[in-house]
Length: 74
Image (cartoon, rainbow, N blue to C red; front, side, top):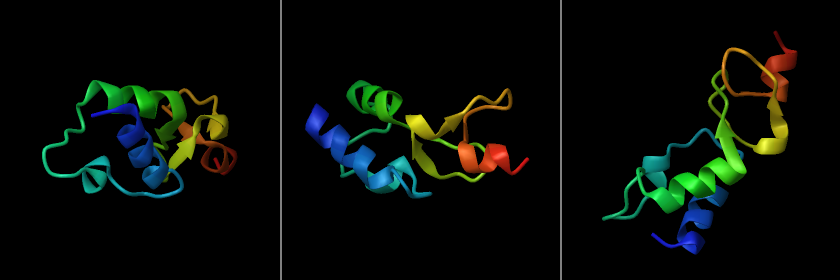
């Protein structure tokens, strides 16, 4: 997978509760190193609500990556 395709998948995920697998084309893998790097560099999956959020929205939580909205709601 090239970086452009990985960035397309990241763009499809951000702001959704979708799965990586649902964004993949035939022959693509969620374990692809380029995709994993693109995700790690840009977004995270909130452990509370399940939404994909941009890194700037990540709260400092001991329970795992949480978006600011979920962390403030505790």
